[in-house]
Each structure stands twice: as structure tokens, then as C-alpha cells.
Length: 218
Image (cartoon, rainbow, N blue to C red):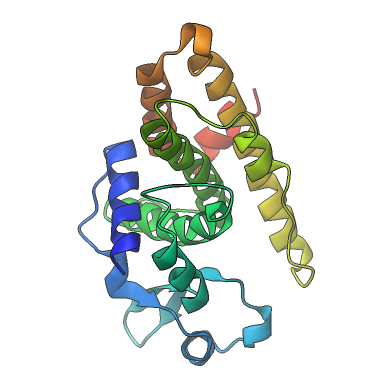
């Protein structure tokens, strides 16, 4: 699926953070296959999931993105034209690519990564990459409602346990605050400084979990 490779390249360019592994080599698209690998019922699975499977002396990393999501993205490529119709599927796929990219980037540097950190970075990645695409596709015009669409008009799966739900809610809340701050400081049409926006994104990407949370708490 070249669209996933192009999403990975988008994140690589956005953060100047290349990884040697291609997300397509770790891709699972069928729920039955995922169910066999992680031993969880398919009705409790989302359309996107990064998973780790323990073997005797190693751990296998995998990325699940539902085949139906990929089929819709093939018909309406958001990397060519991101719009209201494909934004949701774009964010679903981008979240999986983000988890994979950040996990691989961190592992090669022997950095520990928490689940909250993965979710927080993915929330930032969805917004930042969408801004980058809209800027490129619409002559610098980003829809005013984008922030609200990604951070306010959200819902969580009802079967999530309390810890998981709190983690997702915290990631959403922290990312919303961070992205709003960047937007107001660096993307205001009257004093736009996209180079500062990009530099701050890259700095945040390289911060560890505790440093990110500490900064967002200020």
C-alpha cells in the first residue's frame, strides 16, 4: 500500500526523523489475522492498532489497519486532496503509521516509550500532517474548523477499560492544547512564521515522555 509509505515519508520530512523500516513490511489488514496474532476478540478491535507479539527470544511489531479503511483511501487519496470525506480515514491510517514510526525511531535510540507518549505523539501528528497537507493543497489555507474537528468532535469506544480511556482522553487534551498554542503563535495569518512552527514540532518530537508532559502542564 503505497499510500502508507507516503504517509511515513510525510512524517519523516515533517520531523526530519528517518527510520530504516517500511511500515508496509509490518502491515496486517485482516481482522481474523490480527485476532490470531494477539488473541483478542475482533469485536473489541479498532480500525487501527499497533501490536507487539512476544516470541521465544524476540518481539514482533505489527501494524493493523483495516482493509476497508485502506480501500477507501485508495479511492480518495488524501495525499492528493484531503477533505471532509476522507479526513476520518486519513487520521485512522495516519495514527497507525505514527505509532509505528515513533516506536521505531525511539527503539533505534534505545529510548523507552510509554503508551501515553505514543498516543500523544499520534494526536499531534494527525493535526500537524493535516496542516501540512492543507497548506500544500490549498495555497496555504487551512480550514478554521480543523482543530475542533480533530480534538473536540471525538468519541471513544465504549468497551475501553478505565485506564485506556483516561490515557486517550489525556492524549487528546494535551495534544489539543499544544497544537492550539502552535497555531496561535506561529500560524496566525497576520504574523505567520511556519519555520518556527516546524522547529517547535521537531523539538517536541524529540522530547521524552516526562519532558513533554511537564511542558504541557505549564
